[in-house]
Image (cartoon, one colour):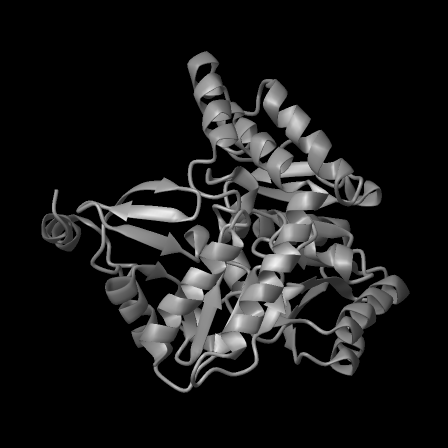
Length: 384
């Protein structure tokens, strides 16, 4: 079907919750995408940090093909080996506790909210200004952005938003606090790293009061910043960690990972999901982890990130880049959404805007030096 035909179907049959660009992608490989007319695009968005191993990575494709021929779904009322192996590997690679599987980042954060409230009943949950934790009602209540919350008020009560200031966090956490939720790097908020001082203040406040420190690594995890988890480069270890996006290698998967002390807070029946952690999805995630949890790959993420950051700083009208690894953003003098559209339609470069003046870059972690340089050339032509 042509794009116009798809747009006609969308107009009559699809709830208008997305603003789509007039492009139909039909194939992907590595850092490249192809549309229905055969045009090739350079992808520096990776499905919003989902395709961290690139599009259709051979190891992920093989894992899915092999598993889908054997068993697709049985529910979590029974054992499947891929889910158990994945939980074991995720726990060992992070906080050393236990894992609950979900289908998305928002669902992983919902699970974290419920676990914190069960572990410390009746307490407030402290969140950071400009945070984004998801669009389901509980996760949205933890997202202190009026433009996103107001149309769906009233929110779930019990969330307290504080400024991005260490002293503000320290003052907000008390004996009646259940948890503190933090993105080590605020992705949807514009790729703003949270300061080491704030992270340390949150850890100290939670240690002082017994509150639970939760890191939302839905976007910053799975190698995106140059370490498997972003917290590993901060010196601050959370009590709970949420993951999704790149976790499934392109397949829909989220996870809540606990430390050993919180691994048994949930009892059977406290929480659940029909699809989460199914054998096909878990097999894909195991293959993606095998690719990403490799020091040479992570070192290349740091190197390519530095190369991309250096190039972004030279673009006309661009501010100093911010972020870590291959999770970067830059503010521009012009209209960022218009730049994104021109980059897509004129230069066949896929990027995205998180605000009126902010461009975000989340290329696959397997991106090459040549592809970084080519993306910068294409963007320079647009911005010039």
